[in-house]
Length: 221
Image: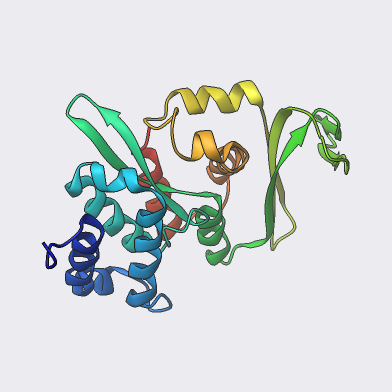
């Protein structure tokens, strides 16, 4: 029928109807229209989301709003995972979102995370003079990933470092509900960076916003 509403239009109408709830949850710097538009783009790019449990999808979008993160694949992602009851949706903060919250705490001068590959030059030393030196190989093929690391510098001059091998990262992946789908399959590098930042964040000056994001991320394990 000409007036039949498609699943994507139905979801768009549902999200628009949730505008007051989103607006109450979002920080002032994120317009609710932008949040809904970004969420709809994510859903259109992942048709499987519409086939998953609708309640879990809507709950995931609300958690993203509460954290003040956009479901754009950089700050946060909506991931489908399998359960006995059928496919459900998991909200997953991504590396960009976690870095955003860490930087917003105002305690750090800088923070970054990188993946190390076989052909890179990489040195990691512990002891009295701990240091990391990393020179990426600039050719087309850097080889397989071998590690991920993160470095943060606080405004008082302290430096925090964390290094994880690929085996360490894969142990974290094995505990994830969505280990065989979504970001772990499509963006392994990003998930490796997020994993090492999460571990480093436990030692950094904390904030309520960051703690909430990490708590929500813990729900995916």
